[in-house]
Image 1: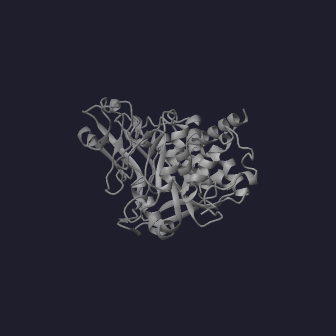
Image 2: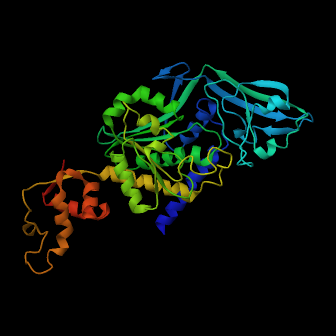
Image 3: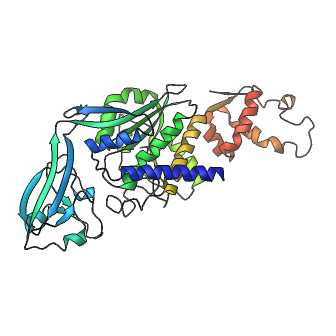
Length: 431
């Protein structure tokens, strides 16, 4: 009952934070990102970094900063038929300012809707080409009068400013690092945008409360340009120290679990994620790196080659509400958020305890004289130590805890007592 109460409380806390962040209009730059990071600072003590417009980051350049205060389409009777203040997905991201009356044909060239989802407002951006536009449900678009004029008003600006990101470094006993990354750059979409940073924030809060073997590098960044920017400033140290990492996104619904591997699927992150998912949620969906679409594109790119995989609930692009106004607070749940937190927490716990083990003697050790084996040999007397002997057989300094668990078909949680006994008897060491 206690654990269920804890689950309910944490899940609800995460949902409440999603709800608090939901109304804010975010983009890859601007005050919406800053406001969102300041709210997350109430959970964890992020350092906020600003990178000026025009800064070269590998093959990219930090764009102008975009901020918007208001936008609407008004008919000739003064009615606002599209209102940014009612739903910030109504505006094409990075739209340039305008205040003009236009006829229907001109307006129609600047409208975006989804014919196959007539009730949804699509999410559209134009980060790197200056234009203006509005997003509207297809149902509403079909009701517009072709014979009337419309006022289009966008109160926005594109200025030389900066790109903003948040960072938290939690030192451990070693300089080796575990990396957690979440993006914070989309307007009001609950699962695609907010579930990732919220679950990451509460994982960071939990990590601050425990003794850590590894150092944790945790970032909240704009997708794509943010990860490229962060790598351009930290790549040398990251390549040197990071042993595992996760890109955390789309972790708020209650439908399924999904896994996207690293480029070759052979890292510690892959091994840990698959072990946890196979044991806790064996019906999870496994994708190929060829189906990538988030910041794993940058973290696993040639020359970067960081061990960053993705554990999700329903994968981005695989649920119908994705990148629309239907990705709202009804899509995510306290249960869904907690489930993702629980899986990622288990992955971190396993990384923390995972070691390679080496037995300290040649041939089988004499367990009897150490009180680990009955000194009276009889039929069936070896059964009780069969698992210990199996563990010893593969503790050759090349297999880690996960490898041995898989080979001898025994859960990691049940190996803890065996490892403790062998270490206490000076028969086992880590390598």
